[in-house]
Image (cartoon, rainbow, N blue to C red):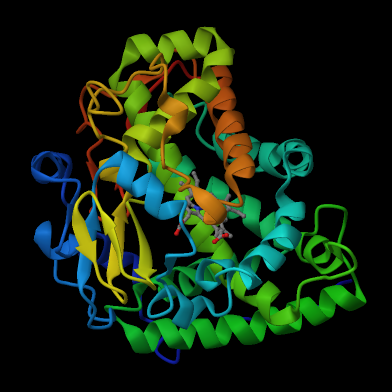
Length: 418
Ligand code: HEM
């Protein structure tokens, strides 16, 4: 029997990061109208994102001249010019996740990214669809498919990406709830810095022991830690501290994003029953729906960069040391790139140009896995919840948020499996 390290809870175990989701990520339903109005006045502005949308500024952000990028072309340029625009997460995510790809720049980023990418190539993640993803989806749907009604957020989307991660890491189920809580707590750094640092420290100890344990006794063929320990490019592997930081980031980068994106996508499809039926009846449209979902409501709205040399963007002078917030969410609704941008339309011709997974060298390393997960989720929902529709007697899904977005609930009805 394998020995598992034990993850330690907060010194005050009553701390609950989930209670503060709205306070931290915002509860605004429509940031799109004010963002579009500002973008029409100019693609680039000297101001901060959160205060513009009525939120307090990120208190952990260092004093730097702010730049807000709202236009598609300009956002694309910033994300694809890493020599000028370096990563800007050192003061928040970097403090808690540690030495991850998200805080690295070339040449270090290029080196480790090439290695880590090997663990998430399309051919690798396609196999996980069968062995890791399908069993988690199967178990969750099995719990309510006979009932004829459900809340797809509470009972499905909120759980499936995390269930997949627990299987990838081979975590004992009894530690899953605590693990989720500690991992999410790392992202509340600007509101609760002490709690975020405590979570980061305790997860670091836990993962260091887990990595040592997997060196001694690797799990099965899907053991992500063993895969990362063995990944190399020209004989160079990843140091333990980079693996541990990646593991700290995983629940947020892979779990929280996929949870939010799947929820937004299901809400979009169910609010547009014609498109729901079209995708259900022609499964080749699933990938189109996913890409349009990423454009329309990609859950990560902002990417942070720091200008390291003076430059100019859309006629606005950007001083060296400027803190640049690239609002991918606003760029994805730039009408000069995407006509009628607020419309969710799976038939849109250029939807794959979106910035929902970012662009440039830091483009999401897990994008192929995310697509596999969402494709499997949609296929299973189409097959196992016949005649799925929004519950007319319950509130409709409302997507909220300023930095990360998702609907609170998706109340549905369907024909129960007998
Ligand atoms: C729908 C789900 C997902 C969305 C919307 C998403 C979104 C993003 C975005 C926007 C970035 C870039 C941030 C930036 O440029 O500053 C990113 C990076 C990243 N994502 Fe994802 N992600 C998703 C799923 C995943 C999954 C499943 C993994 C699992 C491995 C993952 C791992 C990462 C990592 C490690 C990075 C950092 C890459 C780098 O800096 O080189 N993501 N993701």
